[in-house]
Image (cartoon, rainbow, N blue to C red; front, side, top):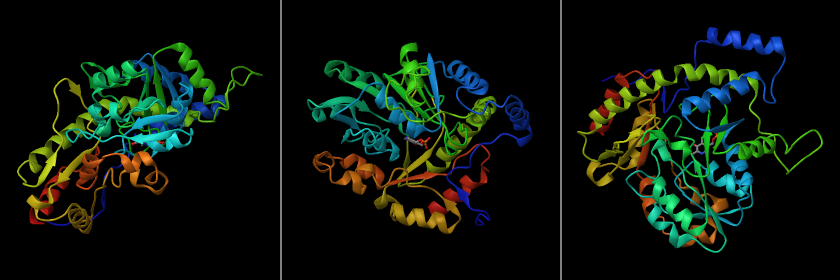
Length: 372
Ligand SMILES: *Cc1c(COP(=O)(O)O)cnc(C)c1O
């Protein structure tokens, strides 16, 4: 089997044909509205709310600022329970709000925050739970809500991976008090950079929209030290176009992921996440987990081996967020038993998956793994 001539990366951003985008640009140039809730921005909010089946959505210039703002709109303070197994922006959003992250271990089956370990981490200062639907796999939303209701905590989901995911036939984004999306280039739905907050009522959306525009609640009223995190018209226009191609792209991803599973199921020492019934997936990532004893080589050896063959997987999420210098010293990082998260972080590789990916790559990869 020959080595791939071009480097194959973990993802390749989906883009429409450039010709399709030109008329949108012409419209922006004609009407000279570039940002501040322009016509494409309003149209994208409307179309996304319909498409995702959510009541209210506020667009942002990126997902990280959406997370930061979500914590502010609910006036979250003190301590927040979160997962160490995520992209670092999840915890950074707490840091930017002067909130102490309290890391709780994950359950190994779907790599999400383990609800059974949340209660032990609650203190009088706890105000919220910030779980992540890792790889687009829904958290145990009912159990998390039950705990939040008992202790009077807010729940904010980092749903950066979960665009389009449905659980029990309804959008996963409707669970919790707020959900946050990212439309970064690497995500299943991208506006180059972009993000959003999903909320349940008009009053909350109004306050989110103030906060993303410096806190302006009218010409002369500033309600809080808001940030500037507005989505611009180019991003919104691209979003409108991307939305037209979304379902088709997810179908292609599904074919790729199923083919991976078929190829990998016969390899001893490699495991992957199972699908659950009553979930509509978006097939955003293809994580595999290396059992080094069974496979005979370590995760990092396999990762390097793939790289030598021009296949650039990524170790999402390694290291754990609790291992980075700014969080490592926290007593909550030191004391917590994060053993499941460590095990997963030390065994994971995310393999390339994107709609235009050549299916031959899967064969190449399983060949490389088999040969070791
Ligand atoms: C991508 C991502 C973010 C950050 O979103 P940006 O749009 O890149 O700012 C936050 N959380 C998770 C889990 C992510 O994967």
